[in-house]
View 1 (cartoon, rainbow, N blue to C red):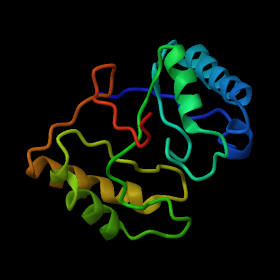
View 2: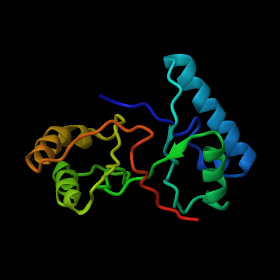
View 3: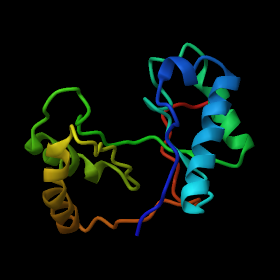
View 4: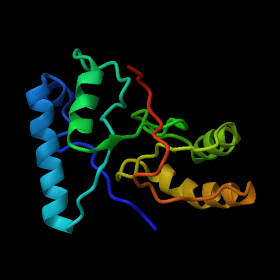
Length: 154
């Protein structure tokens, strides 16, 4: 199965993190777009750059509060094999970055990217999935019962 979550409408850090109002405008746009196109009223969100990003000059806790006021939950990740470094990233590094760290977590959320510039990520997936299954990892669809992996605390 799968779940659909929100990330951002614009993905322009300098805009969405400039103020509470700007963040809420972007949030409303992405929520409306997803709902209007799919009929899914998703409650899942991932901050661009993560909740502990170094881009926002505003406290990220205020944006988390906005999400919670709408009944949304945000999720970060606890496994990131580094596939979004802006350069060609080796398939082997993605595989080892995931398989070598998965046992550290009871509930793992893996951050991967799937755009046209991340071909090695797509190539790594069969080996990653096989390796996770060999380690008896259970795959779950994210929903309201998913433990929230979050990088900020307040």
